[in-house]
Length: 201
Image 1 (tube, one colour):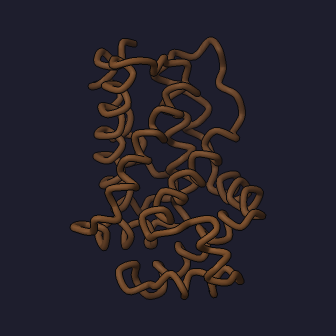
Image 2 (cartoon, rainbow, N blue to C red):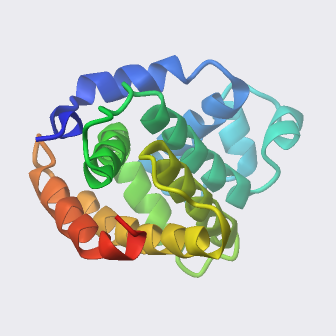
């Protein structure tokens, strides 16, 4: 079994804290905190800046829209997933990809309620389009970290395929209250097995 399946919530939380010193990370933490407490649709940019201990001008200098904040959330979890221990070169690409994505879900786990609210409140919101584009970039980084090429049109297709698989597992994750994310792991393993040939593995 790949090492990522045993990734603990404690390590994911430690990665979150380690990444939290810069202004963008503070804004991400503020956005997640407010989404958790009062919902995402009614949270204003001014409230996010205040929660982060920054001025509205500071927020504007880093993230100029709600869509940009959603994209920053994706980047933040990208960094946590990519900052984990290096993959074993003897692992299969599918196992390396599994480890990376499970590391991402472990990092999301303490913020499940906020993520759930952000997802549902973003339905029909034009600002979410920017975040969807960023998701494709995120999936490209996960593929590259797993040693799977993403260049050219084939790479674009792989990013889109993995993004669809990831979103389908995200739905399972948002309802998975188990301590070890067993349902999420099972769903991710099934999805990756299904798309493995499409990723050229």
